[in-house]
Amino acid sequence: MKNLSLVLAAASVIVATPALASGGGGGGGYSGGGFSAPQPRNPRLVAYNKGKRAFKKRITCKKCAYSSGVNNGKMAREVAAKVKAGEFKLKPKQRQAVLFYISERYSIAT
Image (cartoon, rainbow, N blue to C red; front, side, top):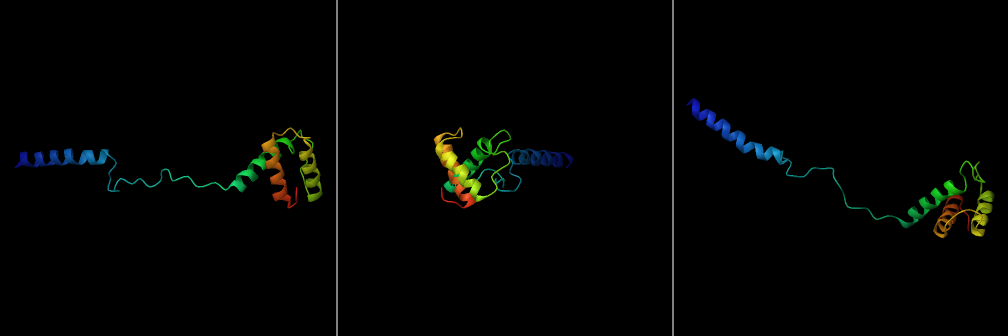
């Protein structure tokens, strides 16, 4: 009888081990977290963020002409005119994005 209980115990360990090793702890194989489908990006938000980055890096940085920042619409119009004139070191796409950022941020037509 003792041998029979040892055999049954060994068999249950052998059967249970592959189930635990495969991560099948009763969850049906679904792990929860993981990767989701990529969300579509809003092109206006992408352009705004690119413009904001370039604006901060090329126009309002510590060593830049407007290091104290752009505080009002009048100053924003002045900066937009200088951006259009090519006074800042910006690539064409950056220039476009900065103008979009200024128009959205300060509610002005550029």
